[in-house]
Image 1 (cartoon, rainbow, N blue to C red):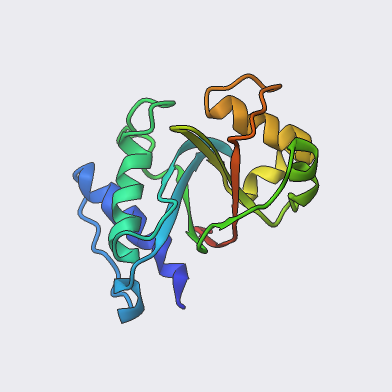
Image 2 (image 1 turned 90 degrees about the vertical axis):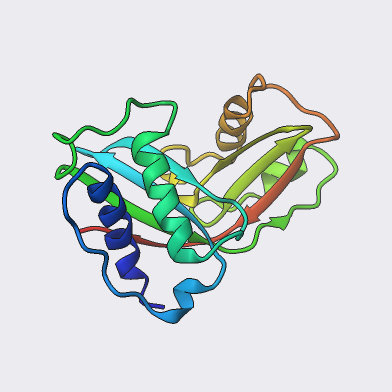
Length: 178
């Protein structure tokens, strides 16, 4: 799949929202198939926004467009992207595989199943959910720390555990602007 145009599609969406004329590149028919994407924006090497979908519920091209806009203008951790930042951001688009449930009897066994640098993980307990893309392993390489931070992101204390915890793993194919 010629996914290297996905960051260009994301940039066109952001640019056009900011009032810059930026034509969207032509895309292949497979981008009309359902897919789940995450769009990550970085500015000078630092996270500037990251929003995505965990399940395929719309065409890949539309998911990329909408997640690009959400990452730029709707990530609650950051103010909306300004026109002055537009040319300096770098865009990465990750296309997710279907999440697969992990089977475990407790936290220790769950941690032993995590594959650093490979897995994206969804943490779920009750109505709360969080995820980290596989790229997060670069800053959290220890599986126990990775899981602790996922718990925090979901609004639980790092030491929290319950038999109701569910974990799902997924892979990504990613493309980044140069």
